[in-house]
Amino acid sequence: MRSTPRPGAVSSTVRRGLVAAAVLALGSTAAVATATSASAAVSCKVNYSASEWQGGMSVNLTIQNLGDALNGWTLAFTFPNSGQKVSQGWSGNWSQSGSNVTVTAMDWNKSLSTGGSTSIGFNGTWSGSNPAPTDFKINGVSCNGTPQSPSPSPSASPSASPSPRVSPSASPSPRVSPSASPSPRVSPSASPSPSYSPPPPGTHVDNPYAGATGYVNPDWSASARSEPGGSRVANISTAVWLDRIAAISSGSAGNNSMGLRDHLDEAVEQDAANGSAPLTIQVVIYDLPNRDCSALASNGELKVSQNGLARYKSEYIDVIAGIMADSKYSNLRIVTIIEPDSLPNLITNVNNFQACQEAQSSGAYVQGVQYALNKLHAMSNVYTYVDAAHHAWLGWDTNFQPMVNLFHQVATGTTAGVNSIDGFIVNTANASALTEPYFNINTTVNGQSVRQSHWIDWNWYVDESSFATGLRNALVAKGFPNTLGMLVDTSRNGWGGSARPTGPSTSTDVNTFVNESRVDRRIHAGNWCNQSGAGMGERPRANPAAGFDAYVWIKPPGESDGASSAIENDEGKGFDRMCDPTYTGNSLNGNNLSGALPNAPVSGHWFSAQFQQLMQNAYPPLS
Image (cartoon, rainbow, N blue to C red; front, side, top):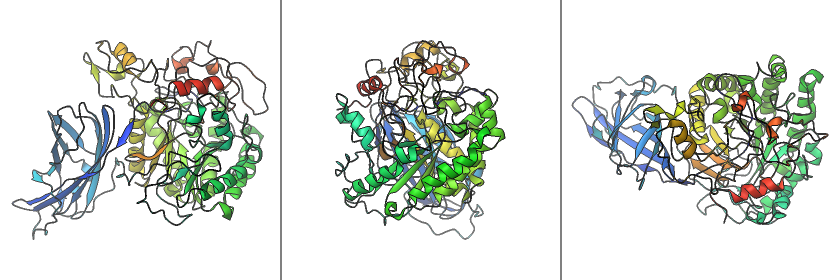
């Protein structure tokens, strides 16, 4: 997996990492009300659902019309604390004066029939405290949630609410964390909330992580336990990577000796030890022909020019689907992560790499992903999440909408259409911060936008949380269902330790301000291989924020991204200079040093020094 593309077409390397701020789920506040006006009975209910981290928040509001049909609405509310600020809003025209916030409707969501609703949202900042507002008003009328009888002659003609052109996150369901996972063959240390009643085993649920425990890979767990201090994380659920055909039967690289059926059998045993809680196992589907066409360290075994697509279907996907379809695994929730980096490469790297040109012209990536979705979605207990790179790859407007369009094109070409995809995952195997707590995309320094800084480089996003939210909104607006869930790989994006800033910079120079304020301490956002200074991020958990199904550890910490120097291997993986700590870079990373750790083994093999660094710099810190 690879590096990061800039505006236009450069790029690519997704790596795994995680987050730099603890996120606390807040309860939903239903404050809404009702009243009458001269010409129409105005009655409304507003649900305010927020997640927060230190200094930041992401909020989803649902407006429900309980009175006469509305043809135009304005929502107003007041923050209880003067330190609460809206920084970026969606699905409405947002403005703030002091503590007073006003949102006017967009053309596509201004009409609300009686009983109709619409969702809007914003990202924001806070200082001191972050209480939820309660004094919501629609068109000047307080919302208390009491239905009114429609007036005989409503001033606004009722019309069905159009589907949103920019869709907000779905209101979060009760959050039950699956993060604490069982140690191999031992009952898990954390159980789902007693109030949670799991649906019948095998039922396809909206969020496969909710109320579930996570599968612990015995191979990875043993490697982690062999490290000093590794027992602190050895019971955390990580993904199983099927990075070549042989891995299906005999395990992937390094000391990962278990094949897919071995893991599923082990998952059944762990599930039996869980009691009534379901168990979720994550499997990475990762062997497209011309895989990772812009990076050498993670090149794959199949080639487009050597009948690669046919082999991918018959020798790889068909075999995987056949194993997963075994009835003895029907009670498991099997989450599949579909082909990291593949489709994003078609957006940014076709003009730069011949292997990417072949992947596009042959249709291998698109057809391969569609084939995998058709086979896997057909099983009710299997869930599909398509890789969507990260903010420093697709965050520029020249990349963002084309990627949304490509995702939609791929999905509509499957048997089940957009319903063949349960969600998307960002930051797979990368180190982009979950949240930048000390600035956002609307921050200005001495009259200059932070977008003008060398680090952000005119990107529209500064972290994975805002990127994932924006991407989800755009995908739903394009036609994906509002049940679409986002995952963030937080395995290596914690960026804790002594180098982590404790507050915003006081500099009036925009470059200095951003560099001193950012928690992501990479030399350049395009660096991806075995990054020096990285740390483990948020521990896996379900429903961390509106529209997010889970934070997950897809890239197992301690598994190398690529060798620091050329190492012969039979896995098809080449030597990528971005993994060489002496490399002075290229156009993808602004001709900066690679920031890679020295003495790294071939990708996927155990890298003790990296694992120790990730534990040392974990944020939140390990206990």
